[in-house]
Image 1 (cartoon, rainbow, N blue to C red):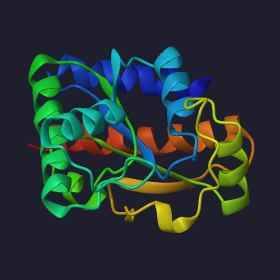
Image 2: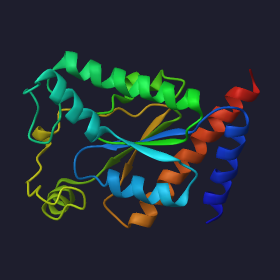
Image 3: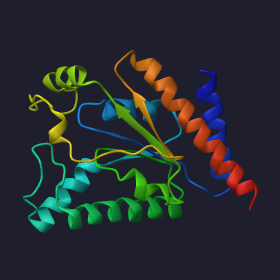
Image 4: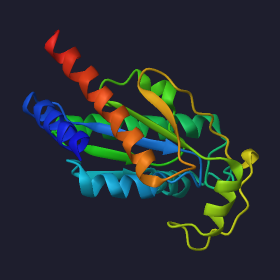
Length: 198
């Protein structure tokens, strides 16, 4: 599509200026994050994805953190800080090495990451409760996850700001993808203007 071509050329321009494109696809469980990230990886200039489920499991392994919900969301504030620190450290490393990365996963602190200059920003996917329950009964990523998802199981609250925007994913996937591309395009413009004005 024409917006994909525009985004590809802006990512190239950003890379030519020595800056990597790091974009986040977050949201609650069952909102379609992983499906969106996979699709973006095959259509845009991202070199790899950084899956936060692996970070969650690593922290649980190293800290014996038992205080998580059934959907692997941390309830412990100090562990939550470690999690955000790992994301920021990793993004700084990807940025230093010039790797365009898609961050895919729940529990992103959109307030903390707003201040991080390594990260362009991202989208927060959201779906209605009936859609969420339907998707979690037929999940594309967790074939054993037959759970009725209720709002109480998601402890993270996501906040929109100038770098993160909530996009509803109840409808057609390609419409959601288009909205995600518009947000990415906006963030690329923002970053390019910031660099040009410095």
